[in-house]
Image (cartoon, rainbow, N blue to C red; front, side, top):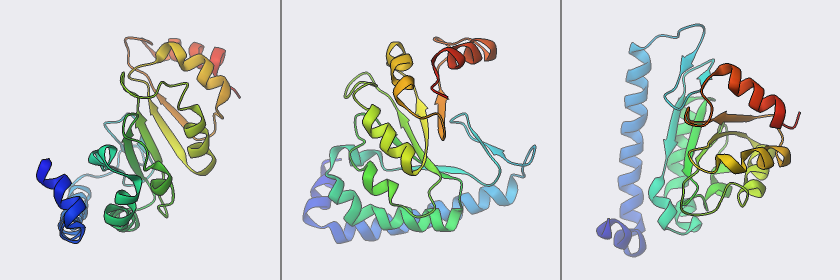
Length: 190
């Protein structure tokens, strides 16, 4: 990682060239995947717990959590835009709550279906991120992986629109569909 971060600062052009090659390989791999995998029930499910009516993939740039948002914009954003353009309208971008600062640039990716944010024990709390989530939901969909902060979720849901929001809650907090329906009915702002 040291070499990557040094190259990102000292030779961003070389990193951008390498990123473009990796991006091209990603697009080819996803194309190959979907040439072999056919839709079920009219669409595709993803390991992140959502279903889409067309081909879907989640892209990410986790290392950007340790870089300035401008580095994402200048070096990686174009690759992500090309991937979304190539892969279609059901591409989701994955972020971690400790490394989300480049989300505004991600939101400007044409055709992106939404963002997925995994909450973590370190970094901002769920309630601290409510303004960010509200901003995301004004422009896009949001999958909220409530890995931590479940106790704050009822208050957060009262402050967030439900349109475009998909909740992924571990079964240690909610153990089934009926419990989930009861929870959302009691806490979701509709």
